[in-house]
Image 1 (cartoon, helix red, strand yellow):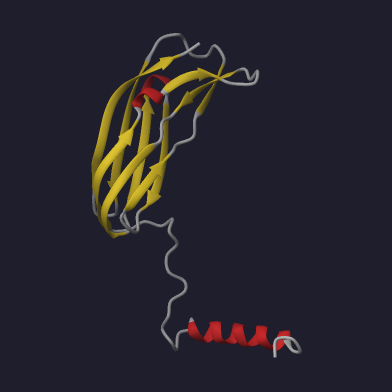
Image 2: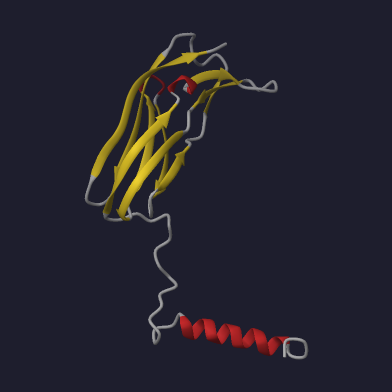
Length: 158
């Protein structure tokens, strides 16, 4: 059948798919995407962040910028109910920067959150250090709880 009439096979597959996901059968193929969060909560077992990796370093390959390098947060999520999200925020008030990454939680897993590094013009920052706060929160429409918070110093390397 497929050799002589491939268009007939394609039409049958399309019709079966439409009927199976249609309102008569009741299968919903249009559930909320994994990027939408809602009500719910999560239990977090461990949060690992190498705070020594939060530094300002010169750009590579002749670029005329310095980068605020942000460490990855590795979060062990033990249980999830609903569709909460995990948010990682790195705030450096003296530099007027707040860097974030987030993930919608749908099941227990190890989740990596990795905000992008931030560029500054070379010489814009002094050789001093800057205070920063790293926070990981579980957030939904009904709750927001902090599961990790650390105050650290950001060193400027030359």
